[in-house]
Image (cartoon, rainbow, N blue to C red):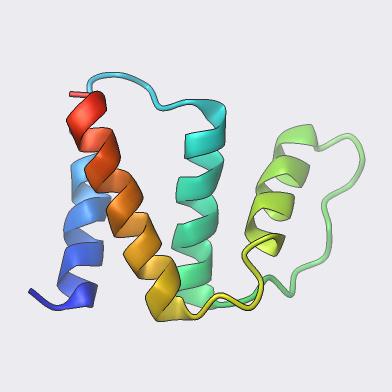
Length: 87
């Protein structure tokens, strides 16, 4: 199966998790997804009162330089790991 198909399947698989992943895992899912679909974060940092937005922005910014393909693979790997422990 191609990486893009695996990536799409992993997105669908996240909806089947029965236990909530940790905050760190959720941030990694978000960051790998954004890096895999949009590339490096070039958006402006959220304001100081948007704590959740800042965490998400920083998580994505930390993935800077990671290729879209590598980010998609890491997303797929993370989801597969979650499927083993959170179902």
